[in-house]
Image 1 (cartoon, rainbow, N blue to C red):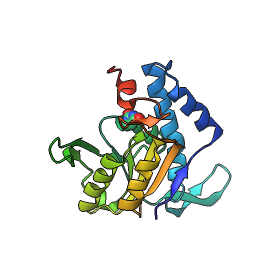
Image 2 (cartoon, protein in one colour):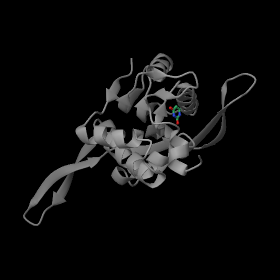
Image 3 (cartoon, rainbow, N blue to C red):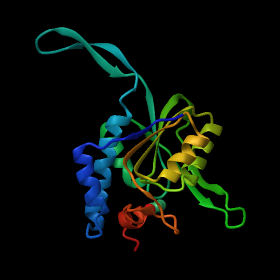
Image 4 (cartoon, rainbow, N blue to C red):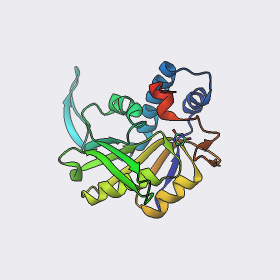
Length: 208
Ligand code: URA
């Protein structure tokens, strides 16, 4: 089964508390989402492969390391976009794909309405990002879509996870590790995470 890694560093816990605060405005919310994404990214990239390289310091020749992986960042529209800048701070040469999903009102099945991935996604370590892992339905469908495109190395990064969402990903995609800044109590009857932080998309983009 995939791991659930709670990245509960004091800096993250502090920033997540600010994100939860109803008094935090859109500008600060956006900045905090990026900062927490950067901090989670640091932990989620711990097992990236490296190669030994030669390097010349001002003192002598020695050896060092270079990341030996191609990386893709795939935000799930729309709230995932808020995490992209924070991920690119640590991985500036990563390619960014996008996946948009909606729920078909008749079948209730998630359908992708927009998807643009880096052409060589199959060869990349793919980081799927979405701030809120609630029911897990959208994230699971996005991962299924990526797998159908031949992507095999996938990690899921979120800011806040609910037990229901984690259980869904672990059942549907047992090979995918989940990295989350906070694992909250439950979902409410409207599908919002409790205590959560409200609607991440609305708070990022000021749409409410
Ligand atoms: N999406 C959000 O933006 N917030 C939640 O609590 C759940 C899903």
